[in-house]
Length: 144
Image (cartoon, rainbow, N blue to C red; front, side):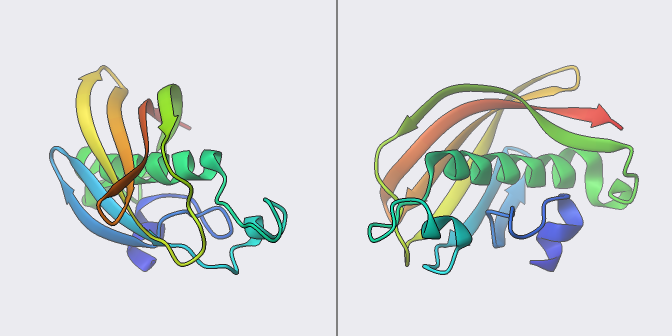
């Protein structure tokens, strides 16, 4: 968790990745263990807890921010808070399965291309060998 909080500005309760699995020049892979105690389950279908799709998307976007922070900004420059990865576009989000407590998710992002300060990425969430959701999105490195 310390590595994640060093790489991106998100903090609990709005942090939807809990481990960094891999980061390379092509993309990143993170993980999230789903606990029944996560606060959104109290109000999102009580008695039949389902992780909201928008939070699944957020886990992908946060994984993209980890990728940009580590590979594009560079760990040596992370203390320069004048640049922040922010979401600039969401395209083609598709939800294929529900996420329930006790699921262990692997979140992947792949860099498609870069146009100036904009990074187009493709994301995927899996639970085991099953695809949960996919989304295309863009992050921008924005000066504060």
